Amino acid sequence: MEQEAGELQRKAEESLRKKFHKKLFSAFAKGIVAYDMIHEGDKIAVCISGGKDSVLMAKLFQELQRHRKFAFELVFLMMDPGYSKQNRELIEENALSLGIPITVYETDIFENVTHIEKSPCYICARMRRGHLYHKAKELGCNKIALGHHYDDVIETILMGMLYGAQVQTMMPKLRSTNFEGMELIRPMYFVREKDICAWRDYNGLRFIQCACKFTENLATDPNAVSKRKKVKELIAALKAEDPEIEQNIFKSVENVSLSTVIAYKDKEGNRHNFTDDY
Image (cartoon, rainbow, N blue to C red; front, side, top):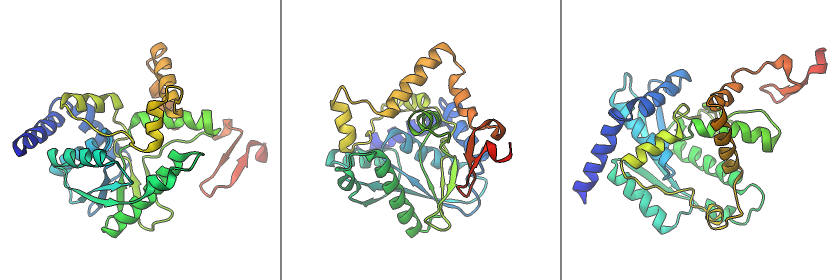
């Protein structure tokens, strides 16, 4: 068993240095440099959900630390929000076989959001982030790293427009307003989901999905389709007609001209209308 685990870790790490170096490691490093995410002396809580994105992020961080030009610390933090026994075991087995020394702690988040009918995923995400900040700060970290990738970013942009009536994006880094001195970073910002899937399949890895009861209902009900899935399918359909669609969506929030929008909010949340100085 140990020999098999060691071989799996070796293959996964070697694939990041060779076959997937450009698509994954270089894209990971590009995001960190472009948005100035890591500094000397940082202690980063790498948040492991058990899915493919966060586990790959953990391996990329380990590879980055191997090449590091300055000192920073990593804590691989896995919060159990109420996973089933089977999913919890899969996460721990993956961590062990891939050489990720996870720190596990338990919460009852899934139980608390089970009966929430409106926006359960949003509430769950907010609660999970709060718990992660709290535990990371308790462990002496000044940053938490989440595994959101490029596809998450462009899907979020469209979801905000189509379902939230707003223009906004998933930021590459954020200072916490509730936990002083804490910051959130998303180092997978330029990593494509198809490349993550390719790395997973090449190494024969199996990961959990969200694993909450709401997601399980979506999986068993053919009529239940999440908004994110709808947007993902919409982007795929548009890309079939124009290969530049994804890049254009991503860049749209970099090319905002305030003189051509009806209204906007500043950093303090104050609303400004174009008629104010028309």
